[in-house]
Length: 324
Image (cartoon, rainbow, N blue to C red; front, side, top):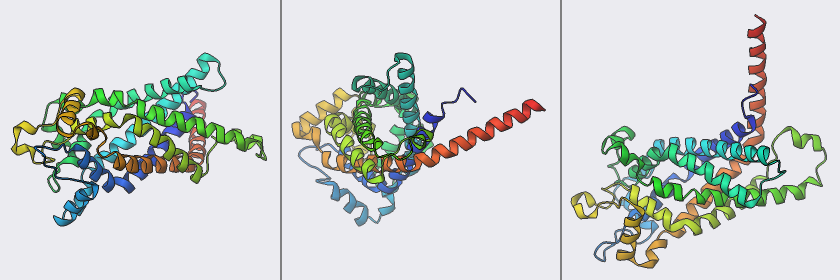
């Protein structure tokens, strides 16, 4: 089992479990945020003036459970996305250190590594990402299943927004670079007070839950503010055609490219439209990322122990097979 990168596998598993937990907790907020971002003012009229209007619509129409529409698809997408990202991030980082001979990854190299991992993730999970967005932005009570959502359009439609997704690889690249750099500085301060250096080498270093939460929130805030216009364009491109009643109006179809989305925002909402929903995006993504990183840091040690036990079991099984 020498070819298996156990440390990257540990990071990937921990990250995926953290993403799954944070996604379930914050999903109603994510649905409200996505529907609010997807709407573009038409002829001076606006269905949702703020985030609470989306929540009130679900309550007043007795469709509160519809706040969870598309949860299964989103969980699947989040689990696969975070697993691929964390595995790719740690794999590329280890590969860089081995090839370059450097002792640590600098800021520029970290950005490149994170962007490469993000690009791989976007390509692999784009169809699920598109499907979950369409489910969330469908009218309450009218969301369709995963396979029915895919069957509505061509296979190429499943990759709507891929160009923006690749552009947005800069978001996690910025986030995890800021987080990783802050984490390294914090852990260096703690090394001097460590009682047993041997213990530190036996498993990956971990932050406390509070430290991971604060660093996760700070790093995600920076990334979100810098990339928000592209984030909103992506939601508009992937939105269901029925999210605002546009199925009755053929002229209100969702934009197909980032240029179309930018033009629609500029023409109907002006420059302020590029940051419509920013507060909701920061609230959701900061809480989500902070919870993800906090959970990941807390379970990484146990995941590492589990991986060591699995590796030992596989090695013993391999030796028994060879001896027979």
